[in-house]
Length: 172
Ligand code: GDP
Ligand code: MG
Image 1 (cartoon, rainbow, N blue to C red):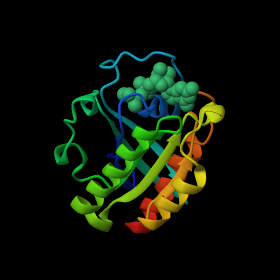
Image 2: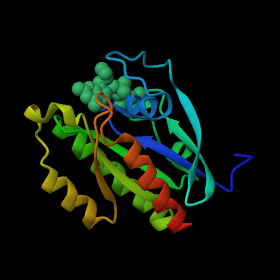
Image 3: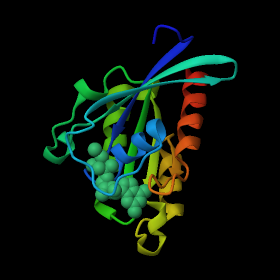
């Protein structure tokens, strides 16, 4: 962005319904909705933050729901410095899908991209099927970092964007 010292593109990836749009709306607008209209918030969001004395512009790309048709590819994530690969802690399939995305990003972009794996819906701890230990160990094994979040309760969301931005700055 024009008035910032640095700018980064961040993409959201993950299965439908894991909470990608909810995470970005929580971060940018501090709102949460129980039902999202799939097409309503398609596109990208921008935010400028001050960090370590620098103005950093973030452009966060959210999907228009194409993940439901397996129709997201390099055109979407090319040129991004950060990726938030989201799964739902109550849905093992979404975790497997997240691991597939990580593999694809590593193959396509190598170490040019800073990878985050987000276990969302941490408010639903009672229905958790993906253990934190497993997810953290996996993240570590692929050079990514794991974060737990609840877009609903606003837990971990600000923290993960801040940490990702600091990691992108040190990788740049
Ligand atoms: P997307 O398809 O990945 O963009 O997912 P959405 O953001 O549209 O969210 C899908 C559904 O999960 C919606 O009904 C949200 O209200 C719900 N949801 C999103 N984040 C959370 C969360 O942290 N906790 C709970 N309990 N529900 C969530
Ligand atoms: Mg969405």
